[in-house]
Image (cartoon, rainbow, N blue to C red; front, side):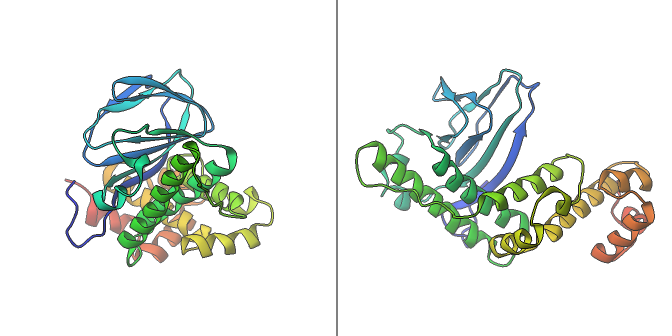
Length: 273
């Protein structure tokens, strides 16, 4: 994917928080742009530069442009945050850790992992929201992430390096992950029932992500409903159930409120021939 000339470098092309399918024991691919992988929860084995590399939970891996890479699983679901981006050679040239000749695998401690999860999440939130200036905001968060990698390298080499931690953000990140898992197909649940002190948490979430958790979740529900209306023959009751509504009329009312028309009208207007 070429970088639009009006967009900033480094330019974020894709970002996602995914739980890899445990049935896919080996997944190899290559593409344009660099890729950052952050392994969470359960370790795995990654392929980098043709070699198998042990990647326990808390491992950060960088793959370079057009470099074949992948994952070899053992049947366990692996949670991985991914950012695919077009690099800025001048910016990255200031950090030896980002050079092709250096190691590109880092094992993070718990505090470092929290900082990187926070930045990966901010990048993904910008791509999800598409608010005004999202390209520049995503690029800025990515620059911060790359600077932290450069500081990790300084620590490893005995230099002065420090990874700042986003204080008090762990519960916000857990809330963000819960929303992302529901977007990926986990059953929709009430966020207020899932978290203690939700009222305070949702205000902190909004300060970080620019929208309330309820609004973000509702946006994902409506996106899923629109996709099913366009691409499947599922009935309205089943679509309502899949996006978390017990009663079909409640789904229809919410859909009309957010999209501006009824689900049936949307299907008629956008159904693929």
